[in-house]
Image (cartoon, rainbow over all chains, first blue to last red):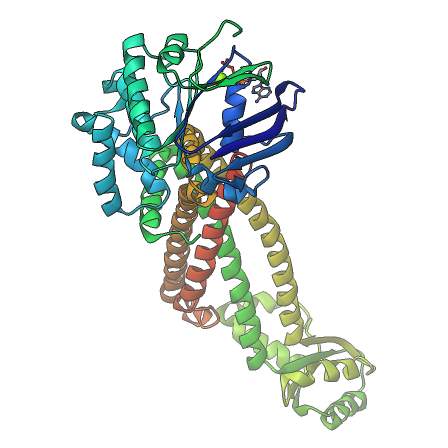
Length: 228
Length: 299
Ligand SMILES: Nc1ncnc2c1ncn2[C@@H]1O[C@H](COP(=O)(O)OP(=O)(O)OP(=O)(O)O)[C@@H](O)[C@H]1O
Ligand SMILES: [Mg+2]
């Protein structure tokens, strides 16, 4: 599903954010990406989203080489990926329903498809009753659910979450984790960058640890570890 | 990928919404397009009318007048008349002595003819040559220039040539002014669109992550620019058309009925103005918005 082969990334300011990263993630896996601040987690996510290009190495998504693609191909690559951010990134002037529908409208879905799909997804994330609310009328956890619904609505094969629980209290964070686990159980691959030690330790999923841009550990049913 | 129709409807709606949101800048944009096109319209009407006058007078006045030097003998004057009648392209010639010319002038002055009393006759002897066709004018005139005893040659081709020269200058000056105004309009529109872009940063960001194509993201902004240019053009069309029609009417009714014969009737201009102004206005709008988007759309 996702494959990094010897990927390095050096930013223009000569910061070496990733060095010789080799990662292979299969369909349906749930993977934690951990590491101290500045270890290169977000850079890895940005490479997958084609926000930036690797300096060397090769990058595959769904068996397609996406190392170097034309600018106009990028939107179509991104449609395979649902993204979730720490800060939710919802549109404040749109309701919950509209925020989710927006993601469908953007890729040219019909009103009929939108009317059918959005309620299904909202019920999946447990927000059916809040469909008409605006983001500022929701709790942080609810806002993150909306952003998960938006990431899911176009049926991507991968969900990438960059510190999705970073702004949430522990209880709410756990609700979000359960939701992501459910989504993963339905077959969607999940890659989650996080600092949340408890969550990583409890979930017992694959853990990839980065330090200084290198993969220092990659194990199934891993834990957070002391080296971070 | 072809833009789907429902996307298109959505985009147009967004265009109107953001235009309304920045109504001050939108107003300035529309005004700048209108201003540029108004100047264009005025210059166009000037040029067309000058052309029209040149064209119509050309067909009406196919004469050449020569003024003779004052100290010629009778025989010399007659010889000139005979030579003229022998030339190709000359239909006829009429001699007008300085006395006859003076009488005609007196008659034209009517009650004010006393003005001429006490001054000597300043008018020269002349021949009025009727050409078979205006196309012989240049040839006849250049032959006449070889004659002795001719003080001055006056023919309407002169006037026409002058009109053509004026036309050139009007056109050149006009092009420069219009060019500058169009650049200003593009600049103002691109700044207006930048405001919209700034106001919708978040939205654009999200659109990118969800996989919107650049075309889809650009769409609403281009539509907004296009609408600004379009509205500016339609305002300019109305002002120019109704303004010219009003002027035409006033000249026709209150001043010289005859003069409007030489003017281009307003309804002749309407189609051209509508097509030309609309395309220029829309063009300005699209260029303005595309320019403002160029930099920031790189992922
Ligand atoms: N756009 C950029 N230009 C230059 N350097 C950058 C850029 N983005 C990140 N970096 C640098 O690259 C390194 C890795 O950054 P990255 O954001 O990937 O870390 P991270 O693991 O996501 O950290 P955090 O846990 O704080 O989010 C850091 O040293 C950072 O300063
Ligand atoms: Mg980060």
